Length: 340
Image (cartoon, rainbow, N blue to C red; front, side, top):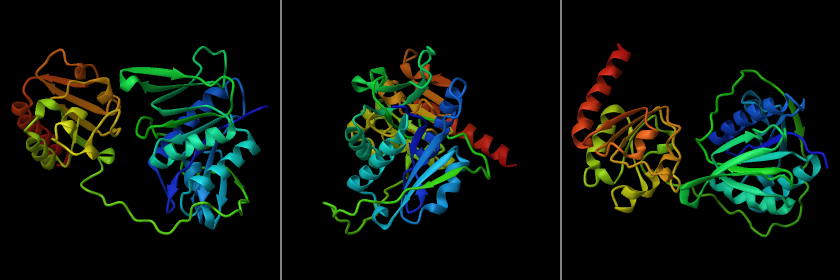
């Protein structure tokens, strides 16, 4: 069966898209541009499910979609594993996409394996990198890389015998750098046909209470490891002075120095701040997998052989307790200079 195009699941809540959607559209745009060198007319197709969401297709076009398949129905107003699986599976069996990319959000991690099982294909979960077969032998074959064995290794996975190629991709690991104001494309409206009674009924949605800040959206992060044990108050004070937030490695979280929701790394969150300051963090791959895409990384560690220096833009060998106050002072001077 002939398959074509790269599909992206455009997750939204109350008509607000998850940021990972724009990252996936940008990446799909790059992949299609590579494929189109040998196989013309490969398109980026966004899947938009929900209720009263038709007015949001413009945003998807501007971020890279060539076509948007919309299924707009009251039964899709709130996410349902059962209903969304039915609709996306119907789209796959109707249009035969070559690939389907889904953000590794709570919703994506729930939805993707259901779809893969329904359409009898493979799924690479929690990917951090996607590329077209670099050997050039298979112009549409995706090479999908994800951490394995607790983050100690990275494995590249291919799905040569089944379509679509499916993957969930961690937020904040790809660039959302494609945007063309006013860009348009093709809209396909899909009729919602599932009238059978659902096994699960939606009663109400209780908004999650936000405690503190979301480190995934922070521009400046002061992150502490085991080496900052007992001194996270210094990190908090430094972060406060420059408008940053505090994060932590798994080791620090396990020691009770910081809550789980500010953990960075393989088993925590992936962050891409403008400035990431790693204090007393050794730099195990489980941690660096969650922060190595930061724009500028400053590492402070007493051990000159610490692995964190291999991913740092600037490395400082020394005691963070002594260095941090001076570093913050210099950052403040730079901020004052840029404002004047």
